[in-house]
Image 1 (cartoon, rainbow over the protein chains, first blue to last red):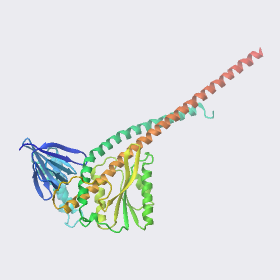
Image 2: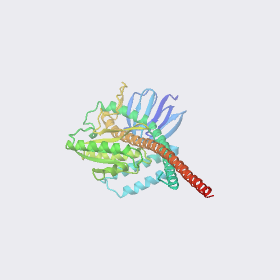
Image 3: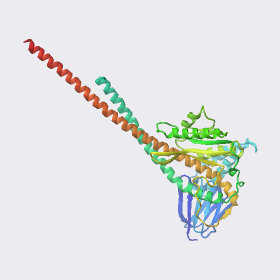
Length: 135
Length: 292
Protein backbone atom coordinates (compact mmCIF):
# COMPACT_ATOMS: atom_id res chain seq x y z
CA UNK A 1 0.00 0.00 0.00
CA UNK A 2 1.56 3.22 -1.08
CA UNK A 3 1.61 6.02 1.44
CA UNK A 4 -0.89 8.59 0.23
CA UNK A 5 -3.13 9.66 3.06
CA UNK A 6 -2.34 12.89 4.87
CA UNK A 7 -2.58 12.39 8.61
CA UNK A 8 -2.66 15.30 10.99
CA UNK A 9 -2.86 14.93 14.75
CA UNK A 10 -3.71 18.13 16.58
CA UNK A 11 -3.70 18.56 20.36
CA UNK A 12 -4.26 21.70 22.43
CA UNK A 13 -0.51 21.93 22.96
CA UNK A 14 0.59 21.66 19.36
CA UNK A 15 0.27 20.16 15.93
CA UNK A 16 1.65 16.86 17.13
CA UNK A 17 1.99 15.03 13.85
CA UNK A 18 1.69 15.75 10.18
CA UNK A 19 2.85 13.33 7.53
CA UNK A 20 1.79 11.18 4.62
CA UNK A 21 0.93 7.66 5.71
CA UNK A 22 -0.60 4.44 4.43
CA UNK A 23 -3.38 3.42 6.76
CA UNK A 24 -4.64 4.86 10.02
CA UNK A 25 -6.45 2.83 12.66
CA UNK A 26 -8.46 4.66 15.30
CA UNK A 27 -10.53 3.78 18.34
CA UNK A 28 -13.86 5.27 17.38
CA UNK A 29 -16.61 5.49 19.95
CA UNK A 30 -18.44 2.85 17.91
CA UNK A 31 -15.40 0.62 17.71
CA UNK A 32 -12.04 0.45 16.02
CA UNK A 33 -11.88 1.42 12.38
CA UNK A 34 -9.28 1.85 9.70
CA UNK A 35 -8.94 4.66 7.19
CA UNK A 36 -7.33 4.48 3.77
CA UNK A 37 -7.10 7.07 1.06
CA UNK A 38 -10.39 7.70 -0.70
CA UNK A 39 -12.46 7.16 2.42
CA UNK A 40 -15.91 8.74 2.35
CA UNK A 41 -16.10 12.02 4.30
CA UNK A 42 -16.65 11.12 7.92
CA UNK A 43 -16.91 12.83 11.27
CA UNK A 44 -16.52 10.47 14.15
CA UNK A 45 -15.84 10.80 17.83
CA UNK A 46 -12.76 9.09 19.20
CA UNK A 47 -12.47 7.57 22.62
CA UNK A 48 -9.36 7.18 24.73
CA UNK A 49 -7.34 4.38 23.21
CA UNK A 50 -5.00 3.13 20.57
CA UNK A 51 -4.18 4.95 17.38
CA UNK A 52 -1.75 3.58 14.85
CA UNK A 53 -0.66 4.25 11.32
CA UNK A 54 1.52 2.52 8.77
CA UNK A 55 4.31 4.23 6.93
CA UNK A 56 6.71 2.32 4.71
CA UNK A 57 4.79 -0.79 5.84
CA UNK A 58 5.83 -0.16 9.41
CA UNK A 59 3.31 0.40 12.15
CA UNK A 60 3.67 3.16 14.72
CA UNK A 61 1.54 3.08 17.85
CA UNK A 62 0.09 5.89 19.91
CA UNK A 63 -2.35 6.31 22.74
CA UNK A 64 -4.78 9.09 21.90
CA UNK A 65 -7.07 10.95 24.27
CA UNK A 66 -10.71 11.79 23.69
CA UNK A 67 -11.63 13.82 20.68
CA UNK A 68 -12.90 13.37 17.18
CA UNK A 69 -11.62 12.75 13.70
CA UNK A 70 -12.55 14.43 10.46
CA UNK A 71 -11.92 12.46 7.32
CA UNK A 72 -12.06 13.73 3.79
CA UNK A 73 -10.89 12.06 0.63
CA UNK A 74 -7.22 12.74 1.06
CA UNK A 75 -6.83 13.70 4.64
CA UNK A 76 -7.53 12.55 8.17
CA UNK A 77 -7.46 15.22 10.85
CA UNK A 78 -7.46 13.88 14.37
CA UNK A 79 -8.32 16.33 17.15
CA UNK A 80 -7.57 14.81 20.51
CA UNK A 81 -6.83 16.17 23.94
CA UNK A 82 -3.59 14.24 24.28
CA UNK A 83 -1.34 11.98 22.30
CA UNK A 84 1.41 9.72 23.55
CA UNK A 85 3.78 7.60 21.56
CA UNK A 86 3.88 3.95 22.62
CA UNK A 87 7.66 4.05 23.11
CA UNK A 88 7.44 6.94 25.55
CA UNK A 89 4.85 5.34 27.83
CA UNK A 90 6.39 4.56 31.19
CA UNK A 91 5.21 1.06 31.90
CA UNK A 92 5.98 1.17 35.63
CA UNK A 93 4.03 4.38 35.98
CA UNK A 94 1.05 2.99 34.10
CA UNK A 95 1.26 -0.23 36.13
CA UNK A 96 1.27 1.77 39.34
CA UNK A 97 -1.68 3.86 38.22
CA UNK A 98 -3.52 0.67 37.35
CA UNK A 99 -2.83 -0.94 40.71
CA UNK A 100 -3.78 2.09 42.76
CA UNK A 101 -7.00 2.47 40.76
CA UNK A 102 -7.75 -1.20 41.29
CA UNK A 103 -7.30 -0.96 45.05
CA UNK A 104 -9.40 2.17 45.19
CA UNK A 105 -12.09 0.56 43.10
CA UNK A 106 -12.17 -2.56 45.24
CA UNK A 107 -13.33 -0.55 48.24
CA UNK A 108 -16.04 1.32 46.35
CA UNK A 109 -19.67 0.93 45.49
CA UNK A 110 -21.00 1.27 41.98
CA UNK A 111 -23.16 4.18 43.16
CA UNK A 112 -20.27 6.18 44.56
CA UNK A 113 -19.83 9.57 43.01
CA UNK A 114 -16.19 8.85 42.27
CA UNK A 115 -16.75 5.37 40.89
CA UNK A 116 -16.97 6.51 37.29
CA UNK A 117 -13.86 8.62 37.59
CA UNK A 118 -11.73 5.86 39.12
CA UNK A 119 -13.07 3.34 36.63
CA UNK A 120 -12.03 5.73 33.91
CA UNK A 121 -8.53 6.03 35.33
CA UNK A 122 -8.27 2.25 35.42
CA UNK A 123 -9.45 1.88 31.84
CA UNK A 124 -6.92 4.43 30.71
CA UNK A 125 -4.08 2.77 32.55
CA UNK A 126 -5.05 -0.58 31.02
CA UNK A 127 -5.20 0.95 27.57
CA UNK A 128 -1.78 2.53 27.97
CA UNK A 129 -0.28 -0.75 29.16
CA UNK A 130 -1.81 -2.61 26.27
CA UNK A 131 -0.36 -0.22 23.71
CA UNK A 132 3.01 -0.07 25.47
CA UNK A 133 3.25 -3.86 25.09
CA UNK A 134 3.01 -3.58 21.32
CA UNK A 135 6.45 -2.18 20.79
CA UNK B 1 18.73 73.17 48.86
CA UNK B 2 17.04 71.51 51.86
CA UNK B 3 18.36 67.96 51.85
CA UNK B 4 21.95 67.23 52.78
CA UNK B 5 24.38 65.62 50.42
CA UNK B 6 24.26 62.36 52.30
CA UNK B 7 20.47 62.29 52.26
CA UNK B 8 20.33 62.82 48.49
CA UNK B 9 22.94 60.14 47.92
CA UNK B 10 20.94 57.68 50.02
CA UNK B 11 17.74 58.38 48.07
CA UNK B 12 19.48 57.99 44.78
CA UNK B 13 20.91 54.60 45.78
CA UNK B 14 17.48 53.43 46.93
CA UNK B 15 15.83 54.44 43.66
CA UNK B 16 18.57 52.70 41.74
CA UNK B 17 17.85 49.49 43.63
CA UNK B 18 14.17 49.80 42.77
CA UNK B 19 15.11 50.33 39.17
CA UNK B 20 17.16 47.16 39.16
CA UNK B 21 14.17 45.22 40.48
CA UNK B 22 11.68 46.66 38.01
CA UNK B 23 14.11 46.07 35.18
CA UNK B 24 14.49 42.42 36.22
CA UNK B 25 10.73 42.02 36.52
CA UNK B 26 10.32 43.52 33.10
CA UNK B 27 12.71 40.99 31.61
CA UNK B 28 11.12 38.06 33.43
CA UNK B 29 7.68 39.16 32.23
CA UNK B 30 8.99 39.47 28.68
CA UNK B 31 10.27 35.92 28.62
CA UNK B 32 7.11 34.57 30.23
CA UNK B 33 5.05 36.48 27.73
CA UNK B 34 7.01 34.88 24.94
CA UNK B 35 6.25 31.37 26.13
CA UNK B 36 2.61 32.25 26.80
CA UNK B 37 2.26 33.60 23.29
CA UNK B 38 3.84 30.47 21.89
CA UNK B 39 1.29 28.40 23.79
CA UNK B 40 -1.50 30.49 22.31
CA UNK B 41 -0.04 30.11 18.86
CA UNK B 42 0.15 26.32 19.22
CA UNK B 43 -3.37 26.11 20.52
CA UNK B 44 -4.94 27.99 17.64
CA UNK B 45 -5.16 25.15 15.06
CA UNK B 46 -6.94 22.94 17.58
CA UNK B 47 -9.35 25.67 18.63
CA UNK B 48 -10.13 26.77 15.07
CA UNK B 49 -10.84 23.24 13.86
CA UNK B 50 -13.04 22.45 16.83
CA UNK B 51 -14.97 25.70 16.50
CA UNK B 52 -15.56 24.98 12.83
CA UNK B 53 -17.00 21.55 13.48
CA UNK B 54 -19.02 22.78 16.42
CA UNK B 55 -20.45 25.58 14.29
CA UNK B 56 -21.55 23.29 11.51
CA UNK B 57 -23.03 20.72 13.90
CA UNK B 58 -24.75 23.08 16.29
CA UNK B 59 -26.34 25.00 13.45
CA UNK B 60 -28.47 21.99 12.61
CA UNK B 61 -29.22 20.55 16.01
CA UNK B 62 -32.33 21.01 18.10
CA UNK B 63 -31.90 22.55 21.52
CA UNK B 64 -33.12 19.31 23.06
CA UNK B 65 -30.13 17.36 21.78
CA UNK B 66 -28.01 18.01 24.79
CA UNK B 67 -28.80 19.33 28.25
CA UNK B 68 -26.04 21.86 27.67
CA UNK B 69 -28.10 23.55 24.94
CA UNK B 70 -31.16 23.96 27.14
CA UNK B 71 -32.32 27.55 27.27
CA UNK B 72 -34.12 28.32 30.50
CA UNK B 73 -35.63 31.52 31.83
CA UNK B 74 -32.57 32.82 33.67
CA UNK B 75 -32.90 33.28 37.39
CA UNK B 76 -29.39 32.54 38.51
CA UNK B 77 -26.28 33.22 36.53
CA UNK B 78 -22.72 32.21 37.16
CA UNK B 79 -19.60 34.01 36.02
CA UNK B 80 -16.14 32.52 35.65
CA UNK B 81 -13.87 35.45 36.35
CA UNK B 82 -10.25 35.20 35.29
CA UNK B 83 -7.66 37.40 36.92
CA UNK B 84 -4.00 36.96 37.72
CA UNK B 85 -2.54 35.69 40.97
CA UNK B 86 -0.03 38.50 41.31
CA UNK B 87 -0.28 42.24 41.10
CA UNK B 88 2.05 44.84 39.66
CA UNK B 89 0.47 44.62 36.25
CA UNK B 90 -1.27 47.99 35.88
CA UNK B 91 -5.02 47.92 35.32
CA UNK B 92 -5.12 44.32 34.24
CA UNK B 93 -7.06 42.96 37.20
CA UNK B 94 -8.91 46.16 38.02
CA UNK B 95 -10.55 46.12 34.61
CA UNK B 96 -11.88 42.60 35.08
CA UNK B 97 -13.04 43.32 38.60
CA UNK B 98 -14.85 46.43 37.39
CA UNK B 99 -16.42 44.54 34.49
CA UNK B 100 -17.66 41.75 36.74
CA UNK B 101 -18.86 44.29 39.31
CA UNK B 102 -20.92 46.14 36.72
CA UNK B 103 -22.27 42.92 35.30
CA UNK B 104 -23.31 41.74 38.76
CA UNK B 105 -25.02 45.05 39.47
CA UNK B 106 -26.89 44.93 36.17
CA UNK B 107 -28.07 41.38 36.71
CA UNK B 108 -29.03 42.11 40.30
CA UNK B 109 -31.16 44.99 39.11
CA UNK B 110 -32.94 42.59 36.77
CA UNK B 111 -33.60 40.43 39.79
CA UNK B 112 -31.07 37.73 39.01
CA UNK B 113 -28.71 36.09 41.43
CA UNK B 114 -25.06 36.07 40.48
CA UNK B 115 -22.49 33.59 41.72
CA UNK B 116 -18.82 33.64 40.87
CA UNK B 117 -16.10 31.19 40.06
CA UNK B 118 -12.81 32.94 40.70
CA UNK B 119 -9.72 32.00 38.77
CA UNK B 120 -6.72 33.90 40.11
CA UNK B 121 -6.07 35.33 43.52
CA UNK B 122 -6.63 39.00 42.75
CA UNK B 123 -10.23 38.55 41.67
CA UNK B 124 -10.99 36.26 44.56
CA UNK B 125 -9.58 38.67 47.11
CA UNK B 126 -11.58 41.51 45.66
CA UNK B 127 -14.89 39.65 45.72
CA UNK B 128 -14.37 37.67 48.87
CA UNK B 129 -16.61 39.93 50.91
CA UNK B 130 -18.96 41.53 48.42
CA UNK B 131 -19.50 38.62 46.05
CA UNK B 132 -20.81 35.10 46.20
CA UNK B 133 -17.85 32.93 45.27
CA UNK B 134 -18.78 29.29 44.87
CA UNK B 135 -15.50 27.99 43.60
CA UNK B 136 -11.95 29.23 43.31
CA UNK B 137 -8.76 28.33 41.52
CA UNK B 138 -5.82 30.28 42.90
CA UNK B 139 -2.09 29.91 42.37
CA UNK B 140 -2.79 27.76 39.35
CA UNK B 141 -1.80 30.12 36.58
CA UNK B 142 1.94 29.76 37.10
CA UNK B 143 2.04 26.70 34.91
CA UNK B 144 -1.10 25.09 33.64
CA UNK B 145 -2.31 22.99 30.76
CA UNK B 146 -5.59 21.77 29.38
CA UNK B 147 -6.30 19.82 32.55
CA UNK B 148 -7.02 23.05 34.44
CA UNK B 149 -9.65 23.96 31.87
CA UNK B 150 -11.05 20.45 32.15
CA UNK B 151 -11.20 20.78 35.91
CA UNK B 152 -13.08 24.07 35.71
CA UNK B 153 -15.48 22.74 33.09
CA UNK B 154 -16.15 19.52 34.96
CA UNK B 155 -17.00 21.49 38.06
CA UNK B 156 -19.33 23.83 36.20
CA UNK B 157 -21.23 21.47 33.92
CA UNK B 158 -22.98 19.20 36.45
CA UNK B 159 -24.41 22.16 38.36
CA UNK B 160 -25.75 23.59 35.12
CA UNK B 161 -27.48 20.30 34.34
CA UNK B 162 -28.76 20.15 37.93
CA UNK B 163 -30.25 23.63 37.30
CA UNK B 164 -28.28 25.22 40.10
CA UNK B 165 -27.80 28.09 37.71
CA UNK B 166 -29.20 28.89 34.29
CA UNK B 167 -26.50 30.75 32.43
CA UNK B 168 -22.73 30.58 32.54
CA UNK B 169 -20.52 33.46 31.53
CA UNK B 170 -16.79 33.77 31.16
CA UNK B 171 -15.03 37.05 31.79
CA UNK B 172 -11.37 37.50 30.89
CA UNK B 173 -8.94 39.94 29.34
CA UNK B 174 -8.72 39.50 25.62
CA UNK B 175 -5.10 39.69 24.54
CA UNK B 176 -4.84 42.10 21.63
CA UNK B 177 -1.22 43.03 21.87
CA UNK B 178 1.35 43.59 24.57
CA UNK B 179 0.02 46.94 25.65
CA UNK B 180 -3.68 46.42 25.04
CA UNK B 181 -6.00 44.01 26.78
CA UNK B 182 -9.72 44.38 26.78
CA UNK B 183 -12.10 42.68 29.18
CA UNK B 184 -14.65 40.52 27.39
CA UNK B 185 -17.72 38.73 28.70
CA UNK B 186 -18.91 35.74 26.70
CA UNK B 187 -21.71 33.30 27.36
CA UNK B 188 -20.64 29.68 27.65
CA UNK B 189 -23.88 27.99 28.61
CA UNK B 190 -26.37 27.34 27.25
CA UNK B 191 -24.02 26.76 24.35
CA UNK B 192 -25.35 28.67 21.42
CA UNK B 193 -24.48 28.77 17.77
CA UNK B 194 -24.52 32.54 17.55
CA UNK B 195 -21.92 32.93 20.25
CA UNK B 196 -18.68 34.70 19.58
CA UNK B 197 -15.91 32.82 17.88
CA UNK B 198 -18.07 30.20 16.22
CA UNK B 199 -17.03 30.26 12.64
CA UNK B 200 -19.52 29.50 9.90
CA UNK B 201 -18.32 26.35 8.27
CA UNK B 202 -17.71 27.05 4.63
CA UNK B 203 -17.23 23.44 3.63
CA UNK B 204 -20.14 21.92 1.77
CA UNK B 205 -18.98 18.34 2.15
CA UNK B 206 -21.70 16.01 3.34
CA UNK B 207 -20.18 13.98 6.12
CA UNK B 208 -21.14 10.62 7.45
CA UNK B 209 -21.63 11.10 11.17
CA UNK B 210 -20.60 8.48 13.60
CA UNK B 211 -22.26 8.13 16.04
CA UNK B 212 -25.31 10.16 15.04
CA UNK B 213 -25.10 13.89 14.51
CA UNK B 214 -26.79 14.56 17.84
CA UNK B 215 -24.55 12.25 19.81
CA UNK B 216 -21.49 13.67 18.17
CA UNK B 217 -22.63 17.15 19.12
CA UNK B 218 -23.24 16.05 22.69
CA UNK B 219 -19.72 14.71 22.65
CA UNK B 220 -18.25 17.88 21.23
CA UNK B 221 -19.98 20.46 23.44
CA UNK B 222 -17.87 19.66 26.51
CA UNK B 223 -14.79 19.87 24.31
CA UNK B 224 -16.01 23.19 23.02
CA UNK B 225 -16.43 24.46 26.57
CA UNK B 226 -12.96 23.36 27.52
CA UNK B 227 -11.54 25.07 24.47
CA UNK B 228 -13.20 28.38 25.36
CA UNK B 229 -12.07 28.15 28.97
CA UNK B 230 -8.56 27.18 27.98
CA UNK B 231 -8.41 30.03 25.53
CA UNK B 232 -9.48 32.36 28.33
CA UNK B 233 -6.73 31.01 30.55
CA UNK B 234 -4.12 31.40 27.83
CA UNK B 235 -5.16 34.95 27.04
CA UNK B 236 -5.24 35.82 30.73
CA UNK B 237 -1.76 34.48 31.21
CA UNK B 238 -0.36 36.24 28.13
CA UNK B 239 -2.18 39.44 29.06
CA UNK B 240 -0.90 39.40 32.60
CA UNK B 241 2.70 39.12 31.49
CA UNK B 242 2.27 41.67 28.73
CA UNK B 243 0.64 44.10 31.09
CA UNK B 244 3.31 43.60 33.72
CA UNK B 245 6.02 44.02 31.14
CA UNK B 246 4.65 47.41 30.12
CA UNK B 247 4.05 48.47 33.73
CA UNK B 248 7.58 47.54 34.72
CA UNK B 249 9.01 49.24 31.68
CA UNK B 250 7.27 52.45 32.73
CA UNK B 251 8.46 52.00 36.30
CA UNK B 252 12.03 51.55 35.11
CA UNK B 253 11.98 54.73 33.06
CA UNK B 254 10.36 56.61 35.96
CA UNK B 255 13.19 55.44 38.17
CA UNK B 256 15.72 56.61 35.64
CA UNK B 257 14.10 60.04 35.52
CA UNK B 258 14.15 60.25 39.26
CA UNK B 259 17.79 59.22 39.47
CA UNK B 260 18.63 61.89 36.93
CA UNK B 261 16.93 64.62 38.90
CA UNK B 262 18.44 63.37 42.15
CA UNK B 263 21.90 63.40 40.60
CA UNK B 264 21.30 66.94 39.46
CA UNK B 265 20.19 67.92 42.93
CA UNK B 266 23.22 66.20 44.39
CA UNK B 267 25.59 68.05 42.07
CA UNK B 268 23.94 71.35 42.82
CA UNK B 269 24.16 70.74 46.55
CA UNK B 270 27.79 69.76 46.23
CA UNK B 271 28.52 72.87 44.20
CA UNK B 272 26.79 75.02 46.80
CA UNK B 273 28.82 73.42 49.57
CA UNK B 274 32.07 74.05 47.72
CA UNK B 275 31.08 77.64 47.04
CA UNK B 276 30.22 78.16 50.66
CA UNK B 277 33.54 76.69 51.74
CA UNK B 278 35.43 78.87 49.27
CA UNK B 279 33.60 81.93 50.55
CA UNK B 280 34.67 81.00 54.06
CA UNK B 281 38.31 80.64 53.06
CA UNK B 282 38.30 83.84 51.03
CA UNK B 283 36.54 85.66 53.87
CA UNK B 284 39.09 84.24 56.32
CA UNK B 285 42.13 85.29 54.29
CA UNK B 286 40.65 88.76 53.74
CA UNK B 287 40.08 89.14 57.45
CA UNK B 288 43.63 88.03 58.16
CA UNK B 289 45.17 90.41 55.57
CA UNK B 290 43.04 93.29 56.88
CA UNK B 291 44.50 92.71 60.33
CA UNK B 292 48.06 93.26 59.01
